[in-house]
Length: 139
Image (cartoon, rainbow, N blue to C red; front, side, top):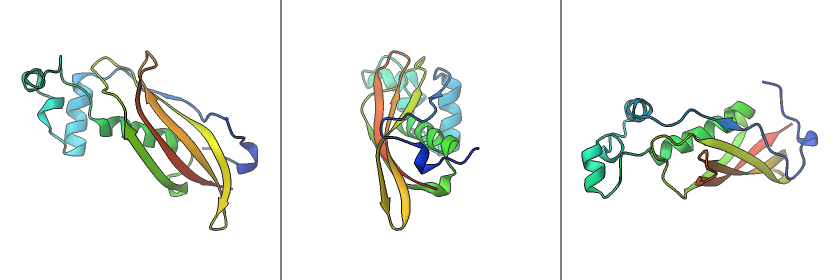
């Protein structure tokens, strides 16, 4: 990982995109095991249909984890200062998440040079599923 330099970034710059494979039942089962979140709406089609959903769907926190991966692919985790996320849509089976971040602000705080990033996770159709902000300390 090449260190990201504060001086090399401008407001509006996008960090490298993270695209993922389409969500499938195996992904959901593996996430259930890893997270301990065994809510049946994510793994039991009968339960999902009783809840008036067409099928099971991804955990919101799975997409949140993908946004975390986007950030830690860009800088070491120790440089993250804050992360806030808001869920805006449901990620259905077959949706391929794409995570992006755009520099929205450059500033200094607590003796560090920092950037604020606007985060978004969408599917392959451009439908937004999560939005948020992160603050990252840079050199």
